[in-house]
Image 1 (tube, rainbow, N blue to C red):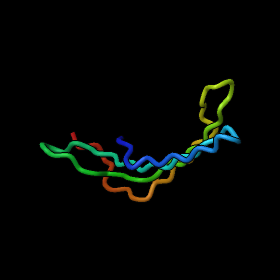
Image 2 (cartoon, rainbow, N blue to C red):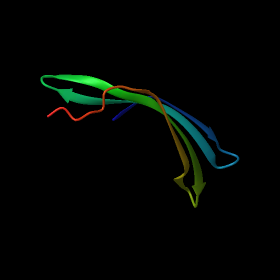
Image 3 (cartoon, rainbow, N blue to C red):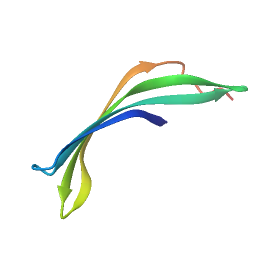
Length: 71
């Protein structure tokens, strides 16, 4: 899984941040790679004692292809 196009918005006054990123999952079939799923992450972060921490992650899947194992 590879995250692409990460967008981060920080609210310094509230010690919070949000980010959005897209992902694509690839599967090798014979000698090539095929995209089998894609979607988006939406994350919320909270800064506590100077350290950023995950507060929430929402995952949405927008496309799913053939995810059968090809041995």
